[in-house]
Length: 401
Ligand SMILES: *Cc1c(COP(=O)(O)O)cnc(C)c1O
Figure 1: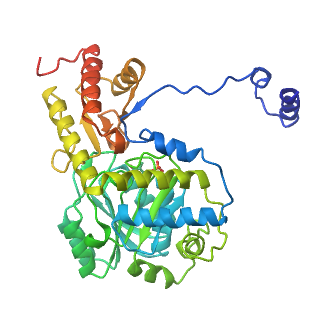
Figure 2: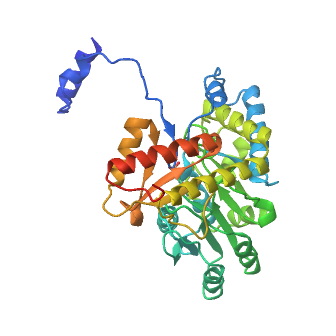
Figure 3: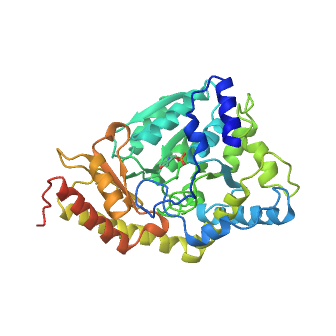
């Protein structure tokens, strides 16, 4: 009996796992049906699920090679880029962040980084771990980084990389990039952008803006399971990477090596791609292409506007009023109301998952995401009414009543 063998092994190694846990039988998985309107993951599109359970082939199979090529092409469309180096990193959004930073940043190098939210702070942390010297541009969590601050930092330092978050999922703010991209070019610096929560949901055009390195994730506006992080890097960035004085410390994230597996026709093994996730990503990108990027951006903008109006009609305040993001909204929790209890009511009574605040906004906001296929008028109305009921249950009186 496997349970018995396991428990003996655990006894031998002094592990205290209770024997009962090993001897009981485990039922089939039966996850609850949730509408995921938080900071991610979003719901997975039925067509993406279907692709995910297609038969697996080897990671070097000619069939998979074709799938990889098409996935890279579709990704270029969604990023709006002609960059050769465009593929999904095997890992979640944070892996994309690590990959982008550890390739571009060399030890001892100064890097300008916007720290106006949790993920900007995370980029700063990774820059430090790569031996870089971050120059943080601090702002209230909810504001964007002003272009003047970027210009000032570029002119008063040796930094030749600027790292910013396009859609700061923890504050609800969207970072304007067009002027900053121009300034960054003037100083011959690279612009590195996190589009984890924005890709396919918020307008962004990598080549037109002149963004040099950009990464995203599968589970936000693309409606894929978590586990892949699309990344793209242009020739300016690759030139800096190829001329590094030190090797990229990470073998797994070394773009110049992954390139030989993902992009070159004579594919050389680097790691076993998560084949089923790549199938899923390809299908998700096909769905984006069918809708059209502009239509998709417009849909996200429209639905977020309706949601914002509804939240304000309830008497609630939006955290990032000045630069609202079309895919995520951080709404302030009224004084005296517990964010955790509201979240739990929404989850338990309505099957709707929203997110609580992180870092500086912990306990202060609820985050409502309308990502990819979840951005619909129907979901807006559902979450507004459910939230109203959940708040009333906590003693809050909505304004419009
Ligand atoms: C979710 C998110 C990440 C991290 O992605 P994981 O998939 O959780 O590793 C990074 N940046 C932003 C802006 C995000 O919203």
